[in-house]
Length: 217
Image 1: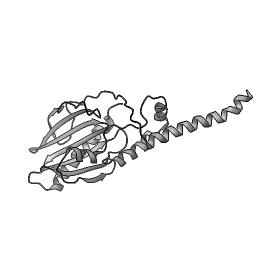
Image 2 (image 1 turned 180 degrees about the vertical axis):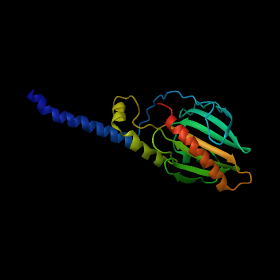
Image 3 (image 1 turned 90 degrees about the vertical axis):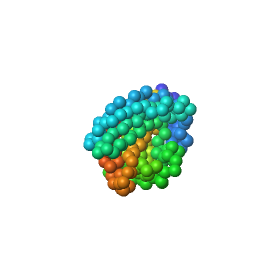
Image 4 (image 1 turned 30 degrees about the vertical axis):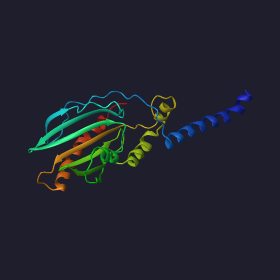
């Protein structure tokens, strides 16, 4: 019994030190371990106030070489003969600024904006289409850059319950999933700001629908 009393504090210190070491290593050098996320099927139709639903499809077949893309869905709505296209990508890639650079070539540099209670997003012009793009996070406000997303994860993922799940390898320390949302409408004869305002109003309703319905891990 005396030996146990003598060893208890050093053992607790060793255990605590090991946890802190692994936690620090995961934050500084995130592991590349692959976790299998629960399959998700987008609904065929999503309500959007002031817009009439037109159609939806699953887009092109998901590329096997890009396992980061888990699921996708394209929606189209119409209002006063203006078509609104919304592309949803359920992915573990969350840097929207980089995604725009990779997938939307020859577009004007996106402009980052912020709305209270919603978060960050970007607007820009591509091939006479005004667009709004953002990442809906599992928890926290929407993000546009890598740094914004990671800040959300530090705030919402470094919690006792998730730390315990991570220690027993039930789930990754950080939830790196994202609903990359890309809305676009034709400019036609309207100004960029008028088009952005239309997109922002649609984005507000779209975000409020999806944030509480983020896919379960």
